Length: 254
Image (cartoon, rainbow, N blue to C red; front, side):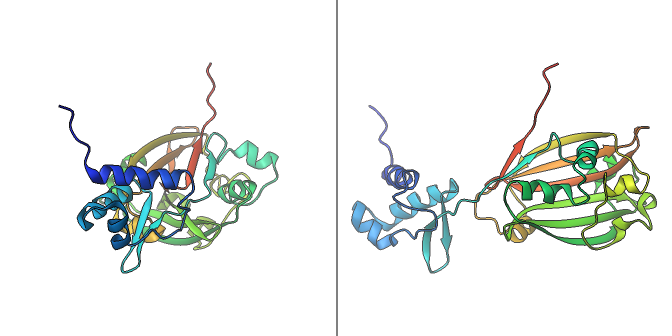
C-alpha cells in the first residue's frame, strides 16, 4: 500500500505553486491561519505545519502578530571574483576607488559601506593563514558592512599583521583606496591570492547585522593575499547571504 502524503504537504505544495506563478507576490500577506483552515478544510495545526515548511524553504517570512508574508526577492549582486582585486585591471581603468564599490556600481546598483577599525588578537584560523601566533600577535582589523541600494548585503572583515600596516591609511576608520590598492601604495604588493569558500547557517550576530530572514544560509569567502616571497599580507573574510549574491569565476581550461 502506498504511503499517504501528509495533508500539510499538499497545502504547502499548493501555496508554493501560487508563489512560483506569481499569484502570491513578493511581500504579499497570506490569508490568516483561520482563513486557510476554512479554505483547506483542515485543522489549524495542519496549516501551521504547511506554513512552517514553506518558511524553512525560505519562501515565507513571519512577523509576530502580523502573520506570514511571501519573502521579498533581492536583486542579486553579481561578483566576478576572477577580476576582483586585479591590480592591473584597477590601474588600466584609472579607478582609484574601492573595487567592490566600482563593481557594484557597474551592475547599476548603489554601493555604500560602513567601516570600523580596531587592533586585536586574530582568530585562530586567521592567525594560521597569516603565520602569526594567535596568543601574542596583533592584527589591524577593518570590519565593513556593505550595502547595496541601502540594503545590507555582506560583511567584509580584513585582517592585517599590525607591524606591516602601522601608520598606513589602513588604520583610518573610513573608506580608503588608492590606484592599485592601498596595500600596494604602502609597498606591500599582493601577487597571489588563495581562496576558500564554505557554506553554513549564519550566527546570531550575522542575522542581526544583515537583517536575515529565517533559513538563509551564508557563503563565507576567505581570501589570503601573498607577496612575491610567499609572505601572507592580509586575510579578508566576506560573509555573503545566499539570497542576494551571484559569485562568478572565469577559469582557464589550460
